[in-house]
Image (cartoon, rainbow, N blue to C red; front, side):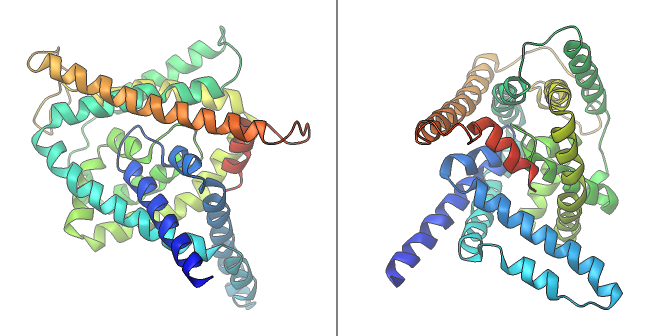
Length: 326
């Protein structure tokens, strides 16, 4: 029994490392990978218990009621699974960030080409999840979102890494990728101009930066994720339509041919290294497309295994409900 439990923890740690590695890659949703390796539901349930415990603690302690209710909620999380999973995620994230940092710094054009392909393929997720074919109402909303994202990513983010308030809000925004279909937290950081500083902080063990960023993650998990949950529950189609447009417009941040100077946010026509750049973008596209196909087949298999139970919602709807539970 002990050997079996130990093997299970090693397996959970390995699954966590896959999720952590995916989180370092813009365009690959860690939630999608968690769904494929079979830990998504338990991970989201655990996050829900933890955020509820924090909320209860904040509400009860000032009123003199102590931490009893918070402790009870905290213990409901499956820590035997979550602890090895989180250890694996941290290890995977640190190793992948160590490998990615020199690539982004020394080969920015080629790294961005891969990222561009990753995100371009992931646009299919919110687009397909939005439901019916888009009409005259949806396209203007998507174009509005795309235009806003294109403009925002054209602004220079120079010096933002030195502003702890920006770091805090970057963490809060990045965690929203947990419940937005197909969205990567790393992609959000790239669009905000905070990806490279965050990767550097991880590699340099800048605990001041990381502490502020983690605080932002926690606040975002407790507040922003709740707002997004409400939007998805009440304006599901509109939210996903706008999200698709925002992701498409934010691809500007990943255009491989950009100014080398951090002050220069201009875009340039393809010049040197075009064949290799296009090949890498295609490779990134294929990676995400493969992940999405595997995830789709996994959902189909789960649907077939329900033996025609009409009361059980389809996988896509189940995934949206799981997102909404955070």
